[in-house]
Length: 457
Image 1 (spheres, one colour):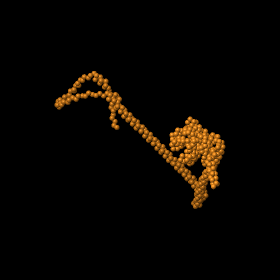
Image 2 (cartoon, helix red, strand yellow):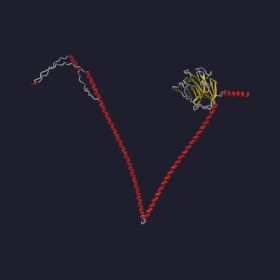
Image 3 (cartoon, helix red, strand yellow):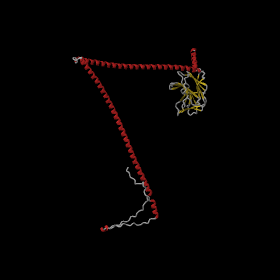
Image 4 (cartoon, one colour):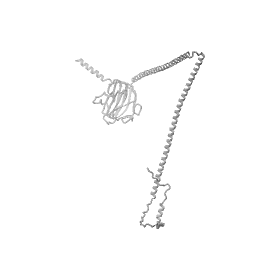
């Protein structure tokens, strides 16, 4: 009964020792990144958009995440290649507009985007540590019911600054809040990664500083890793160069083989042509021999030579005639080509001439149309001036009393033959004022005014 009990106690002690691992005791004395947010620099990507506002403000970094559903990682552009480092940052939350404001640090963000460590706090004096695995977060602290949040007196009051101190010596990570150890844990299969600030949904916050330290030993090992990486890159480049040279040689060899094959094909064709020519000449020689043996039996050698010479001259003459015929053919071909060019030139001239005549005709029509419009406008202007003048100088006439018409007896032929006496006008005494008015208002028509012509639409 004693041995099982002792074994149980021993296992509990071992598990407690594993759980309560010693904190990292290294001298982080080498400053690698110093950021006090006094002004903009190349270490961060500052932005002013609808959802994100990250700008230096009076020695602090002002952060505003205007999105109610997701956080934003404000990552530094400084490239971290350290496996042993210390992040020291001081930040605080702004005036609370919503209950889920949070601010924190993200570090060890892996290059493939499938791993990261986040340490953050909210306005309820709660902190949370979570690990990105793939596309989802796993809470390292707290319970699923509390979404990983842990109440802690290590955090300061709601709107006071809190200092987060993250010490990393992979695979171990220690988290200090306001200079007191809050959590120590391990992560597996992690390498150097990016770091920065994580701003929660719909959050306003400020950061006072952001420092990154490391150790001299880690810097020495980093140089060694860089040298090895450079050697690997050099080997890779050397292999790539050798592979490229091999490919070039293979390509050159293939090209040489192709050229050789082409040369062999040309030589084979030439050999075939020469063989056929030789066979033709042998056949001609054989025919000549037969002709000499059959036809020229009784002809002496001198006559045969004369005939052969004449035949040779005829063959040469035929070849010259064929050459001249070929020259004539080429000349005829050239003449056809020149004729076609001449036709094209004439067609171009005809087209240009037709276009020019069309332009001139349109210009004349435009001028005629313009003149008609100007004449119509002038007629309208003159008509308007005449109407205005008539309206200005118009005088109503006095009503004439109708004279009663008396019936007269039809005149006899003698009376009709007599000339009729003209009626004498009755003198009317006109007043001087009327005469003066008539004289003053009666003016002649202006010379430019003429009767308007009525133009049908």
